[in-house]
Image (cartoon, rainbow over all chains, first blue to last red; front, side, top):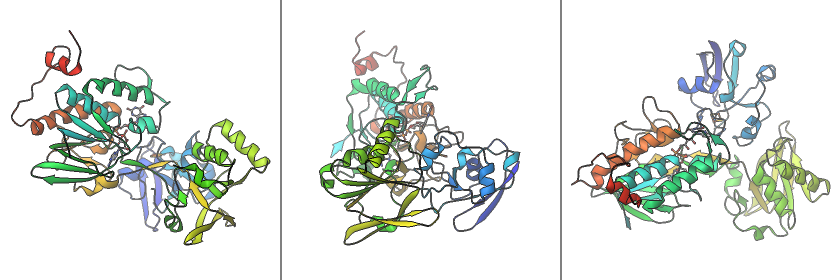
Length: 107
Length: 338
Ligand SMILES: Cc1cc2nc3c(=O)[nH]c(=O)nc-3n(C[C@H](O)[C@H](O)[C@H](O)COP(=O)(O)OP(=O)(O)OC[C@H]3O[C@@H](n4cnc5c(N)ncnc54)[C@H](O)[C@@H]3O)c2cc1C
Ligand code: FES
């Protein structure tokens, strides 16, 4: 288990214990946290699981983007340089304490 | 008004195989899809990628799968209505009246929704100011490229559509290409070409900027772009083009009074009927305990939904289970000689 903090665009905070091995996206969907759509179910083909990592230290600590993630982020709503696809962030001990911020909307 | 046994909404793999199953049991159907081609996600999102989990097909691409499914239903001569979106479903005298955005009307006892995650739509600029000019001078696809002749065109995006149009229009228009980062996802040869055109000043290339606002009074005058650190630039523009790929929108399906669970439609697993009699949902759009969003699951769902349609299409007949290897009636429908 790792503690992940999801912050909705309107500021609502959800702090959830997510099992190791799940993605940050799955952690949100399984707990019915609004703001992450994940239309493709984690296939890195929809960009509707887009989140911002506002803390740059955390952003740099995350596993590097795989090929294709940035291409998909080009197609997200308001991507920034601290954007990630939450379906590509797999929960591990290293992610304990991570905070992700959601964009205003996904589509 | 077209009368038929079943209207299938969506020509993805699931809708196509359901059509096959309807043909096998002797029912007619009409297939509507708002895309300009058959194949759903397989053709729109990954035509060249190999798929490895279609039963008995060790490997095939999205395009090959689609072509084989089309081939498989050829004997039935079903009609496809492409570039057309099903907009409205209405019940009249126990029949469903189905209306499309192009004004087509169907009368049918059964509707099978095989709509995937909804219909593909271009992703639009997030700013409200772009909406005012949407479809006139702010465009997400190009039908007539002659309108850009000698005009200032600002193109946003980093994929093939953005690059190809920037290259093409640079011959006859003043093109500015804006992209949010330095890397492009288009074909390497196009990226190379864009860099050359930028060097020779045939196009202006601006990276690490994105759309902030479209400006103009009545007609468009300029676009303001911003960088992440807050700098902004204003570029003169007669036309603004955005190429950010496609998003999936549930669209009109959400307005038909069906039970919805997030963006999916709950069904029973016996016939894949929804909460409305004669309306079935199969493939990615349906949900039930244990649902897998896989093509093979969609095939199974389509086979059972087809049997579910039978009882409303032929209320006076009893559906009889038959094998394709053995049934002469099925072979007749397939047009194969023994
Ligand atoms: C990159 C990627 C890789 C994948 N790899 C695999 C794999 O290896 N194996 C596997 O089994 N699955 C894979 N999938 C999933 C698979 O593609 C889907 O499960 C499958 O396409 C679902 O088929 P469908 O027919 O239900 O919907 P779709 O393929 O989504 O088709 C739905 C169609 O309905 C149309 N539509 C929607 N609403 C309307 C309307 N109102 N009017 C008219 N038309 C409408 C849409 O335009 C669309 O064409 C992958 C998906 C992606 C994105
Ligand atoms: S869930 Fe679709 S890209 Fe992450």
